[in-house]
Amino acid sequence: MSAELTFNEAIHQDTEGLRLDYTTGLATVLAANIDAAITSRASAADLATAQIDLTAIKAAVDTEVAAILADTGELQADFVDGGRLDLIIDAILADTAALDARVPTDPADQSLVEAKVDTAVVDLKGASNKDLSQVFDLVNGASNPFRKTVFGTVTGAPVAYVDAAWVTIYTSAILTKDTELTGIIITNSGALTAPVYRITDGTSKVFPYGASIGVRSAKLDELQFPARFPDGSQFVIQVNCTAANTRTATLTELDTIEHG
Image (cartoon, helix red, strand yellow):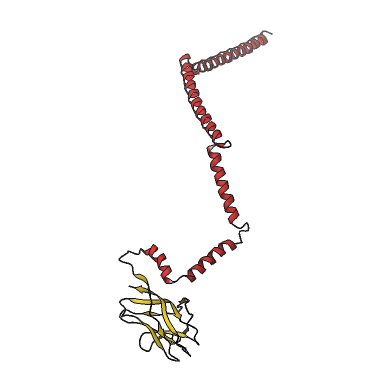
């Protein structure tokens, strides 16, 4: 019995010692954690500084918001009916409507554009080189001393036809530049039988390619063949008909282009 009590007392003492050690250690740890937490908390001065910073931020935000509201108000005034931007948009819409009226609704329908192009082509075809020279002058400058191409027009006097014979109605001077003949108008004084003309170099060479061309009295004949004569040469224009009937031929217009 005495031995059992001694053993129990020993166990009790050991258990109590462990409890005291655990309690003391836990209290120490808790105290240290509480001290660290208290130390990490901001001081009253830190809180005052933070409050000042928040006040500055709020003031900056208020300024920005006020500016945004002012801009929004200005835009609202511009967009109302009759406002500045509203009038600009109305003008754009009006212009767009005008374009819609002039452009085919079908994107594949180019009839309006084609009609304009066809008209322009007809106008160009109907113009003599003398007329086109005005376009050239606008591009190249009529007073440009370095201009390499010059448009010109020559005319002649009435010359009587001779039955079935070539008659010269114009002979050029000796050319000082390479010269190209591009259009010709010959005017007859009356009806003739099969009147034709040709252009020669004054010897045996005939343009175009040894052939002759029917005279369309008083109408421009655009020369669709190479009729170019070099510097130092000259050219001759002749007419012919089956029955002259005392008619005359006059070189009303000969369009030339001088190169070089």
